[in-house]
Image 1 (tube, one colour):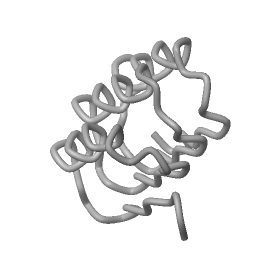
Image 2 (image 1 turned 180 degrees about the vertical axis):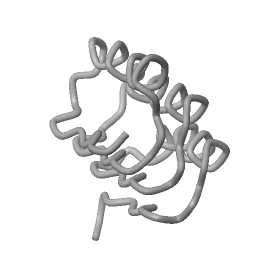
Image 3 (image 1 turned 90 degrees about the vertical axis):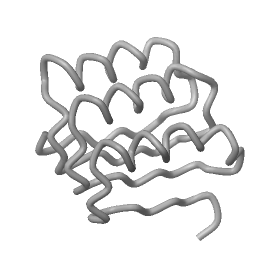
Image 4 (image 1 turned 45 degrees about the vertical axis):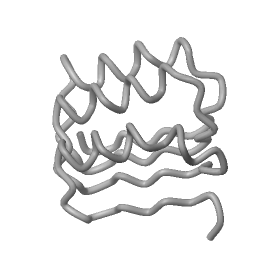
Length: 95
C-alpha cells in the first residue's frame, strides 16, 4: 500500500528504529509508519521524538507492544507532539 511502511514485529530494537526514523525525511509520501512489537526502548523513543519534532508527513504512527518507558520514552514523544501538526493517530498501547 502506497505511503505505508509496516515494520511490525520485525524485532528492530533501538538501532533499527533509529535508522528508520532518520530516513523518514527522505520519504515525503510516507503517511503511516508501523513500528509495533519491535522491542523499542528509550534510545529508539528519543529518535521517534526527534522525528516527530521535525516536519513529517506521517499521519498514523503505531508504537504498541514496545518498551518505551513512561518516564523517559513516552515523555519525550509526548513533548515532541507540541511541534507536530500532521500526526492524527498514535497507538501507544502496552508500553
